[in-house]
Every structure is written in C-alpha cells, then in structure tokens.
Image (cartoon, rainbow, N blue to C red; front, top):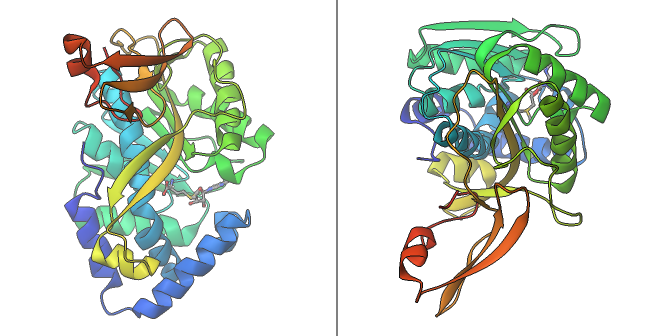
Amino acid sequence: MNPALPAPLADALDALAEGRSGRDLAERAQTISALYRSGAPSSRAIRDEMDALAYALTRMPATYAAVRAALEALAERAPDFAPRTVADIGCGPGTASWAAMDAFHSADDLSLIDGNKALLDLATEMIRRSEQAAATSRTLASLDATPPPSAELVIAAYVLTEMPDAAASKLAERLWDATEGALVLVEPGTPASWVRLMTIRSMLINAGAMVAAPCPHHAPCPIIPSDWCHFSQRLPRSRAHRLAKGGDAPFEDEKFAYLAVVRPSVALEPPRPRVLALPLEDKAAVSLKLCEPSGGLALRRIVKRDKDTYRAVRRAGWGDVVE
Ligand SMILES: C[S@@+](CC[C@H](N)C(=O)[O-])C[C@H]1O[C@@H](n2cnc3c(N)ncnc32)[C@H](O)[C@@H]1O
C-alpha cells in the first residue's frame, strides 16, 4: 500500500495552490490547526475557499494515509469485496473518496456529502479535474438532518469527532442502514475516539454487523484504559505539504483509530492476530503485542531460534496481521 497522495490528487492540489501566497496558506493552516485543537468544528475552522485549500494541503496527506490504511485492512480481510458505489460522509476535501478509489479499483461512483460548502466545492473540483470517477454526486447538507446516501462502501473519516457522543452514535446507526456492503469509520488516534468507536462497535454488532478490522473477533474489546487501541501510519511530506505546514521533516506519523464492519453478504477471510503496538526487537527476538481471534490480548516474544515463526513475523509492523 502506498500512503502517499495519488498523483492526480497531488497534481490537482499543486495546481490549485499555484499562484497563491504560500505565507497566507501557511498562516491559515496554523489558525485552522489551532481552532481544531481547541475543539472547534470545521464550520468554524474553515470559512472560505482559501481555508479549504490550506486545510487540504496540510491535513489531507495524513487523513488520506490513515483512511487508506484502514481500507487496506478491510481489503485484506475481504479480498473479493469490490464496491462500485462509495458514500463519502463528511467528505471534507474528498479524502475518503480518493482512498477508496486507490484501495478498490472497482470504485467509480462517488456520493459526497458535507455541510461545509468550501470543502465540498474543493472536493468536487479536484475529483472533476482528475476525471477519475465515472459518476460523482454532491450534497451540501447537515448530516443531522439528511439521510446519508446508500452505497456498497460507506466511509466517515474524522467526522464523528466533531459531534457529541449521542449524535455520533445516532449517525453511525444511520450510516449502517445506508451500508450495502462495508462501513468504515476512521477517527483520530485518541483514547476518547477509541472509547466512542467501541461503543459504536457494540451497537453495530447487535445490529448484525460483522467486524472485519481491526478486531479479529466479536468479543468485547480486551483493552483496559488507560491503554487504547490505535495505529500509526507514516506518510511522506511533499514540498508543498512542508511549506504549508512550515516544517522541514520529510515525513510524519498519523495516529488514528478505526473500525471496519461488513454485512454478512461480504465474505471475510478467517481472522488473524493483529499487532497493536510498535514491535520491539532485540538481538535474540521480536516482541509483539497482539489482539487475538480468541478475543484476548497477548504479548508474544518470538525468538530467532524459532526460525519459521520468526521469519513469518519479523517484518510485521504496528497494525499488521500475522500468522
Ligand atoms: C475534520 S473534517 C474531515 C474531512 C474528511 N472526511 C477527511 O478525512 O479529510 C470533518 C468534516 O465533516 C463535516 N461535518 C462535520 N459535522 C457535520 C455535520 N453535522 N453535517 C455535515 N457535515 C459535517 C465537516 O464539514 C468537515 O468537512
């Protein structure tokens, strides 16, 4: 899986940033980031076309990488799943649509919905420029008041985090009703987001959903706070991304939490243990924190002497599944 923005998307962003003041974009990005950190919703943080562009330049690479990783985990578990229709809920600049088209080459009919006109305009403009999708529909509406569009793949990325708990659970319920195949929720990798996703997970299991990822089981989550289940995706920073962010590092790590569930009609491969933290390696062994199909957590130290097992797991990273 390539966590970098697809070339047509990166090109569209570059073309839209061309001729704009880099300093203005960087200042707006800083203001937006400060507003989000203080808990402001997108409607307050992003107010016009330039704000939307600044947001896309600075945040889209990371949110794209996280959604792409979550979809990779779904595709691994459901290798025959080939959705054509995708609903990008709270689409922002269209991040999840691009990740879906990259993860599932069958995906070419996109429904984008968002309450922020500047972001929705930017999303539709970049998809239109790239000519990647056969069909695109857009709805400018509040998710609280408008039924979400139905699709084989429904994705809400970094959206529930902008809502109170009760509204987030209500939306998840409606998204499940709109899901014909798979529903994927991606959120920031914080303890609060994990707790919220686990509440939604229980609700969806009760509604008949099958958990595809990250959990390899349907039992209650075995993690005990103050620990929490989250993942980290490394992504490259392009020159435009570095300029807009005002930093020099050539990469960044996006921490995220996610949940992918499917209808029983979507065939799933047997579950495998998932690595829940950065593997620790020493001269003699690698140690893995695993969530196991039995429903429990395990810390396993696999010694080099155990050649076959060691070979099978030595390249495993945080978030991967192992044999
Ligand atoms: C943090 S942004 C994430 C955008 C995009 N999904 C991504 O991952 O880059 C959250 C998006 O959800 C939208 N949103 C949040 N609450 C909403 C609501 N109640 N109705 C409509 N859109 C909403 C915002 O306008 C914003 O575009």
